[in-house]
Image (cartoon, rainbow, N blue to C red; front, top):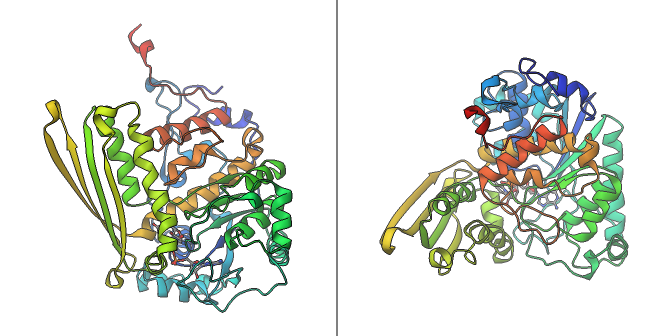
Length: 448
Ligand SMILES: NC(=O)c1ccc[n+]([C@@H]2O[C@H](COP(=O)([O-])OP(=O)(O)OC[C@H]3O[C@@H](n4cnc5c(N)ncnc54)[C@H](O)[C@@H]3O)[C@@H](O)[C@H]2O)c1
């Protein structure tokens, strides 16, 4: 246990978490808006051209001990998180553009920002992808691997990962690829054996994202899922993750509207205010918006966005307040806006004696500016989890729910969606693995 004045250094020295020695390789599946904004952003931060705003691992602090102790080190100084200077990027995409061209295409960062790191971005070129248009109807890429079977494609991905592993000390894979069509878990997903047979038989229930996840986990590489696809949210992947000690987390980055929803809904519940309706609509004009314009991909996103309110408001516990809530989510593809999404919410609430009130939220956000720091934190925290004996073989890293619209949990557990519960869970996990006392906010000792 550390002392009030050491900022947590002693606990860090005593913890069983292995240090972040050497290079961390980050492989992004999909090198579109989110991935290019992440990669360009990390380089801009390394060159001190900008600050890593929105990233908890880079800017966040963690309180240790009592409020009177005055110990609040930066999270990155407290837990052995990989240094940004040690992070190396590569990835896959169905288009061959290098990261400079892809970032220009994405139109998230302005030209001046991109020019200042042009040679770095030009040097990163995607490897050919595993892709099948059946699973993402609106895209048609040419930079795609050919293989006799899904098993063969998985082997090719494993070779890509092995080659990258040879150049760095540790690797993490993150899905920042397009949203695939809606699929449900089926027999092929129930065990590793069934999945491996499915790969050989080209089972149609195995989508490309699952082939990447399988390849990564077989290689003992952690996998984060930024899209609402099932991908690692399947029994076979959870078994494999535990077996190879490669942590997993997902799904669907919690960035704009759902981020707001998981802040506001807990506030209404905390004050016992009722909700009769919540209408959410978005306009979005980037490639993600184009993919989500296809009803089959939208269905995957819709499922991910709709679950939130029921879990937070618990209508079964509070029927008078939430049982008749009408919840609707819409995403409209509107090219003029590009990555600058606008999300409107109309919330019909009611108070004392049932009197109605309304709240309107108009969030003029930037999708990938919100998603990039989340992607960064996820790869750094997954790498930390793999170096932490207590977390390495758990499979799902529920403490990373903070970052997801549809957090994965152990079977039979409902997910925590409330952003502040998620934040407390994340920080308490860090305290726990570093041998610090958990913070319960009880605070009676101050009045002894
Ligand atoms: N930006 C956000 O705020 C946000 C929030 C939540 C979730 N997401 C999800 O993150 C993902 C990425 O979003 P984006 O805005 O970067 O989209 P994007 O369309 O700009 O980029 C996705 C990239 O993935 C590539 N791709 C598609 N299938 C692939 C495959 N099988 N293998 C390799 N590459 C493949 C596409 O060619 C494209 O370049 C989407 O699924 C999106 O729904 C984004």
